[in-house]
Length: 597
Ligand SMILES: Cc1cc2nc3c(=O)[nH]c(=O)nc-3n(C[C@H](O)[C@H](O)[C@H](O)COP(=O)(O)OP(=O)(O)OC[C@H]3O[C@@H](n4cnc5c(N)ncnc54)[C@H](O)[C@@H]3O)c2cc1C
Image 1 (spheres, rainbow, N blue to C red):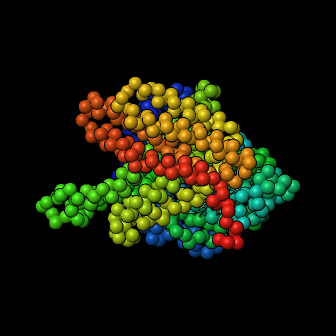
Image 2: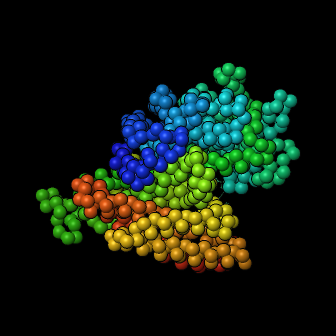
Image 3: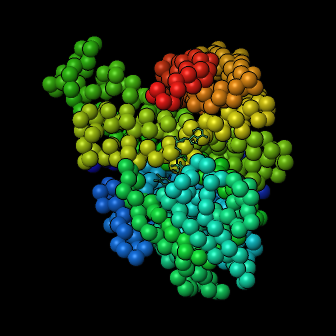
C-alpha cells in the first residue's frame, strides 16, 4: 500500500524563501492583506483533506473504475461521491475564485499548490473539480453578465461541475476539422448536434448538474479554425432561479476503457439538438479556449508534479527499508544480512533524479502560478505585460517538460521497487499508468514543442525568449561576486549562450525548409526546460548556501545544495546531446520515404 505525506517543508521553502510570495502578492491590491499564516494554514488544511480523504480512494478508483450503467448514467468508484461532498462542504472549490460569485479570492499560486497535493493524492478524482475550474475560467473571461450570474456561483460552490468538449473522432490536434453544428434558434439559443469523444468528467454522479463547454460550427461559419464557436450546454437546463430544470439533449453514450486514470470517466458525449448558448463572439471559440489554456496547461503540469512527488516518496521509503546485497564500499548495516538498497549508486541515481526533477518542477510551477497572478492583477501595466510574455513563452515548457519528466520519475520510482513495483499492490505501477495521459491531453507534448518554437519563439523573432534571457542575466549578475555560486552560475550562462545561438540557427534553416522547425521542436523544448530548471536550481542553491554558511541547523538546506549539485552533474549534461540533436536537422527524419518504413 502506498502512502502520501504532503511535502509542506519544500512547498513552504518555495513559497516563502524562494519566491517571497507574501511580499510579491501584497503588491497586488486584491491580495494586499495576505499573510504567511493564511497561506500556510490553507496548505496544511488542504494537505489533510488530500492525505486523509482522497488519497485512500486512489487505489479503489483504479481497481473499480467508473461504470456506464445505461441510458447515459455513469457511476464513480466507491467513496468518490462522499469525498466530493466533503470537498464542497469544506468550501474548497471556491478557493481561487472571484468573491463576486462566492469565491474566496485567494491567489492562483495558492490554488496551484493545493492542486499539486490533490493530484498526488488522487489525480482521477481531482480531475472532476479541475475540469470545473476550466469551465469557470472560460465563462468568467467570455460569458455575458447573465451567463456569469447564472452559472458561475454554481461552479464556484461546486454544486455543478464543468467539462471541456473539444475533441471529435476525426479531430483532436487539428480542431479546424470539427463538425459539430450549432443552429440558431428564435429564442437566441442554439440547437447543437454532434458527437464529442474523450470528454473527461463528461458524466458522473458527483453533482446535480454538468455544464458542458462545447466547440461547434455555425451554419455559415468559415472553414477551419476561424469558423469555430463556443457554447455552454447544460445537462439539465437551469430554471430562471438557477435550479435544475428539464433534461437537455446531451447525453453520455459510453465511457472508455483505458490505461490509467480509471476513476475519471472519459466519455463519448452525444449532442442531439441540445440547447446551448454562445459564449464569446461567433467564430472566436478557439480564442476563448486559448485564453484559458495557460491555466489548464499549468494544471496538467501540476498533475505530473503531484504524481512524481508521491511516487518519489514511496520509492524513497522502500529504498531505506529494503535490504539487498552489500554496499560496494563495505557493509553499512553489519547487524543485518544485507544493506538497504539506498546505499547503491544506481538506486541513488533513480532517487536523486526524481528528487531533482520534482523540486525543480515545484519551484518552476509555483513561480508560474505567481506570474499568472501578476499577469492578471498587478497594478503596473508593464509588469502585467512582462508576466504575460513569460507565461506565454513558458506554458508549453510547463506542460511538456514537467509531464515528460513526471512520467520518467514514476517509472524510476517503480524501478526502485524492482519486481514489487510492477505488482499492483505497491501502487507504483498505477502512477506510471496515470502519468502517461498527461503527456497526451491538453495538446500532446509534440504540439507543445511546436507551439514553443513556432508561435512563442520564432514568430516574434525571439523577443520573449530574449526577455527571459535578460531576466536570467540579471539574476546571474546578482551572484557574480559570490565564489560559492560559481559552480551553479557558469553552466546556466553557458546554456543561455547556446540557446541563443541555436535558436538563430533554427530560424535561419527554417527560412529555407519549414520542416527544420518541426524537427528541432522536441529537443528544443527539453533544452529550454533545462534552461529553466538550471536557472531555478541557481535560485534554490543561492538560498541554501546562505543558510549553510550561516550554520543553520536544518539539514534541509544541505540536502538542497547537494541536490542542486546532482542536477548540474547528472541531469544538466543532457543539454549537450539536445544541442547535437537539434543541429542534426530534419534530413535524418525526412529522408526515408513513407513507403519504406
Ligand atoms: C483520457 C483522455 C482524456 C481526455 N480529455 C479530454 C477532454 O476533457 N476534452 C477534450 O476535448 N479532449 C480530451 N481528450 C482528447 C485529447 O486532448 C486528444 O487526444 C489530444 O489532443 C490528441 O488528439 P488525438 O488523440 O486526436 O491525436 P491526433 O491529433 O490524431 O495526433 C496523433 C499524433 O500525431 C501528432 N500530430 C498531430 N498533428 C501534428 C502536427 N501538426 N505536427 C506534429 N505532430 C502532430 C500528435 O502529437 C500525436 O502524437 C482526452 C483524451 C484522453 C485519452
